[in-house]
Length: 235
Image 1 (cartoon, rainbow, N blue to C red):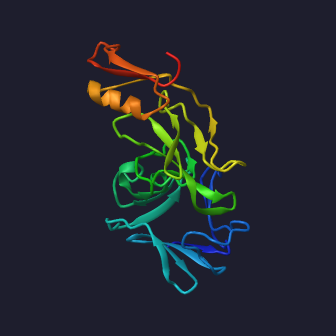
Image 2 (cartoon, rainbow, N blue to C red; image 1 turned 90 degrees about the horizontal axis):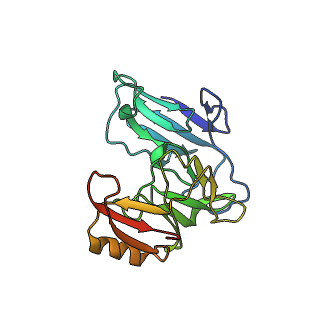
Image 3 (cartoon, rainbow, N blue to C red; image 1 turned 180 degrees about the vertical axis):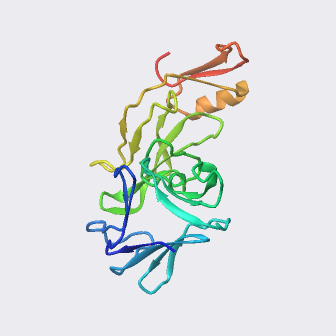
């Protein structure tokens, strides 16, 4: 069983030394979600996954994996992904062998390879403040799994929409900047139109729900079938 403890007598560092995993003190924060209140905390790897416990060995959090690994290992990759996998599997280097991975839970940072879903708990969520990692007021997630777009919410109110031109466009997005709730976006691009398969009524409904939508129409722009086209800026 491997253990990461606090104070940081042991920490994981990615092979290229780009990322480090360990415990930290979040500044002047006094209220956090299920905190470790003492100076000692432990992150342990077992055959059932990861266990986070405090100085009294009370379990604060677990990875809650349903699979039991014959030979579990935890690894911090150069991508920033912290994975638990079964080393006994032949293809242990493939993502299919992962029993759990941090990229499924983006928190407030979106790195290449992370997946943004319509689940509030696993989408991108801001911290309460720069030194308080409690859940903040802003969330960034997919509203409709049929549409390739992400929406940003403030206190459950729609505020901003982003449509990536391709999965390679967004390199890194964070919801933590000097002004809480603002979005820092690196190497991004705006997509003025979006094509997808949906009924005319469904397309109209989606457009009317979004004040950024300026129009929609039938389309067959690829020669591979019919769909609908929506504009989210100037037509």
